[in-house]
Length: 279
Length: 236
Image: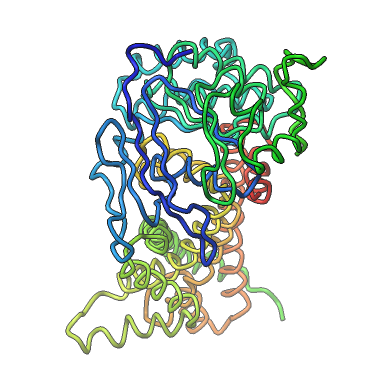
């Protein structure tokens, strides 16, 4: 896997992240550290806080407590309960280097496919149009959309929209990509196209945190799987260990619900990369 | 009551002069009022509380009081504080202030109608709040708000008639003058009614063209509809 000799530890460091919405605490002092080149899949039942954790990583959702650092640089921190969240002076510049892919794609419908990928490069990264277009075409080719560059996003399928969203992220040369259930809103037959793109990214050594229900994908691509429940990390480790010999009762129960049996090596269905998440 | 056609020819030029004044006042009020309405709409969702309160207060005051009272306040009250302005300027400012409050609410509605995820995804690529508004949210707002903006513009044209009460020589004022000189109210007022109607109808036709152009430019025809439907689908 991507975790090789060049692995830089603690590339992204999330320390004791706490977050509440109203009276409901969705994250209880969660800590997660990600090495450079590592691919992490976060799994867990809905409402367990996995998306919120992901969204605090680029401070899109500011935490109520804890600290996030990227390559040693402060992203955001809340030193104590009373203080407002301190954040890096240039959060926007930092976000430009951290890509984010959303469940609902969030492609920009008023811009053509090409312009979707060009826009932030020019506005945020201040690239010239010709340079931005060159980068955009390379990114679109990477996700297999180079022939759609003049289309409107509304004319794309869900899978194509999500691949466009990924191209938009790649064109910014991210050092870290956050993905919030990238295939959950897709029709089943479109899932594999997006997962293949993610797999290629992982093989190229992109550092990624992926919130997903696709356990087959997680087991084949992730360096580490993190299982969350009720705002806490319950168990984490290498995918084959975690998914096949879960230590905690909760994870066992969760995997049973997702009929993880399909992934046991001896099982008849072994090798099928995607599975029904039951949602 | 017979119609005295000579009034149309004798007083037509005078009425057209008033009509021209009305056009100039309304255009000036729109040029001032629309950008200010945008400022108010953005102010209302600002991070700074002071800006939010100021914008909201301005909008509420100008939306919830009669326009004629606003005009009187500008025209009769300001001089007490040493501010003497020609009636025309007062009229333009009053009309722009009144219009901007309505424009602001229309723009705010349009911004709210664009899915929250659009702003979020723009911020996530590193855009500032203003950049995300400028490049991602506001362009999507345009096709949504155009019909309502047209309505507000048409009603500004009609409200401008009230400026006749502070001696602005616009169309209604001209009609009142003609009526006073000729004692032929029907001829005088039917002419101004037709002129107002012609002006608004022209505006409406132009705006319909613009609407079609904007919705064509922003992709398929169903675009605006899709954007409006999106927020509901985004939840969960």
